[in-house]
Amino acid sequence: MQRQRPIILGIVGDSAVGKTTISQGLVKILGKERVTHFCTDDYHKYDRQERAELGISALHPDCNYLDILELHLERLHYGQPILKPIYDHSTGTLVRPEYIHPREFVIVEGLLGYATPAMQQFYDVKVYLEPLEELRHLWKIKRDTTKRGYTREQVIASLKKRECDSANFIHPQRKAADIVVRFSPPAGIKPEDAGSHLDVRLTLRPTIPHPDLSYLLERSGSAVRMEMKRADNRPADVLEIDGNVTADQTAELENAIWQHLPDLRPLSEDEFGDYQDQAEMRHSPPLALTQLLLVYHLLRQYNNVARMPFAPPVAALSRLGSVPASRPLA
Image 1 (cartoon, rainbow, N blue to C red):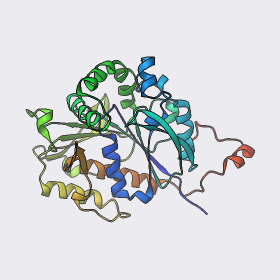
Image 2 (cartoon, rainbow, N blue to C red):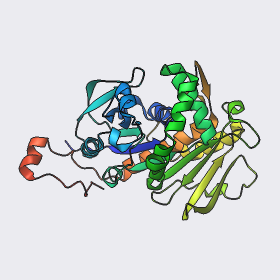
Image 3 (spheres, rainbow, N blue to C red):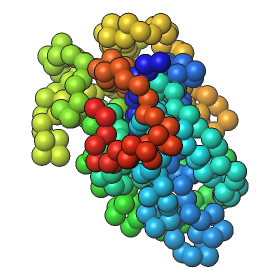
Image 4 (cartoon, rainbow, N blue to C red):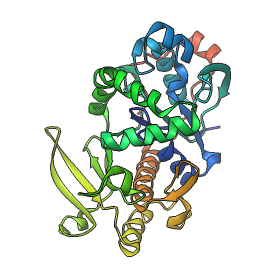
């Protein structure tokens, strides 16, 4: 039976930047029966107690089995199953591994997903999240005190201790991304007061095709606008969506993107774009638009990839000779 290989999306960024929130929205839009979703942070070598004793952070490559992650990304790229380790973030322990078979779309999120060139070549779309640092700190304090059993003081101390590892190992991965997503509070608003009304800026690099949103170029005063500029010394389209975007403006951009997604049943705007603020679920139109734009890229890649059989079983590969990691399927 001929089947198309999986399409792999990477979502990388520092701790508490919203990777899981973005991923959950994509699963909702695409349908969970079509998506395999997993976290690269499960590849930690040490549990929480061991890391404390060794004085190493989870952000450091030496704290993770990156070589195994490379092999697993290659297997997923060729449609093969993996036995993935599991790290329980609520207890900080390593638990029973999970057998995973890739579906049509594979969403890979985590701290070090683009840490090596070998990893980078197996993604079809690479996203990097970089919210304003003050905002990230606020999100991390909220998450780690409500879900992971830390005190506020412990989280603040951890953020300070991890600064060097963030700068040395997480931030450089930004260069590998096709799309950079930055959430920030509106000008003059403190992060803790912004709530769901956050601005978002999406830097769309020409490393992959993007939807035609040129009609937004002439809307300099609008809550949804686009500019062609140089970002990180490279040409890019920069799409900006204000936190105070109106329902009509949101609907216009959504309709423009849905037209490129004939394989999906359009969802109403309130069916995705949700995030958890401690015990409360909230909705963000800029987040919803970001998720929808990423789905566009996944489906475009899906439709562009030529149909081909999944890779033969491992036993067959051993007879034929393995495919070099430097030659992923296009």
